[in-house]
Amino acid sequence: MKIGIDIGGSHIGIGVVDNNGEIIIKTEKFLIEKNNIRNILEEFITENVMQFALMYDIESIGIAVPGTIRNNNIDKAVNLNIENYNLATILEKILKIKVKLKNDAKCAALAEYKYGELKEYKNSLFLCIGTGIGGAVIYDGQLLEAEEVPGYEFSHMIIQKDGELCNCGKRGCFETYASLKRFKQKISERFELNTLSGKEIRKFIQENSENQILKKMIKEYIEYLSIGISNIINIFEPEAICLGGSFAEYENIFYNPLKQAILQGNLLFNPRHDIIIKLAKLKNDAGIIGATLI
Image (cartoon, rainbow, N blue to C red):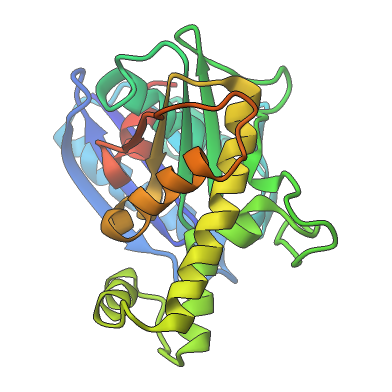
């Protein structure tokens, strides 16, 4: 058995995964308090791994991290406000189990390629759309990675010159305009909802589907998302695209408009009659499962 840990921008999940990619047992925690994030992560991981280790024979631990990994350390995770964090070394000293780290989108892509919606395609694109936007490319059956760091940071390509400030310090980044968190923030602020709950915001959208301001905001969000995705398609020309993260929960709101915007928006260098866009089969478990594959 292996333990997979998925550290997200707003939650952490820990699961025991068998050799078939099935999660045997899982626990989760929302990361509401970010000021003491290192202690929170270390305590929650240590407590639960120790508990699982009493129940199962654990071979190793894989951790999916929303940021840049360098030499098995967290170089930076801007949405968690973390830099130069040697989490693997700290945990190995306590738990006496080998720990490996990888970018969370890369982990999720590996899981979808082996067990999910991308297993039929040798060349594919994975995007995790939630607190930020994580990205990964599978080319000729292999996960593409740069030499020193994971690379393929699609979330921080500039799609708006001198645009809104991103958590990374640059302006106009793709995720600043197209992350689901930013979309929910704008809806919540514009309509004074006082919530970022995906369930409540989806309910509000469905109950106010004819509201012209709301329709305009959704259209603008889809436009930014389609611009970013089309740029990536133009570079890699994938056979299929898989969208994960919280985005999958908004299928009836975003899926068809996004597909049409990409196909009909004069954005693709090589026009297509159709495009294969799938929603992650493993949903929020993809990071946990993929972390055991690194």
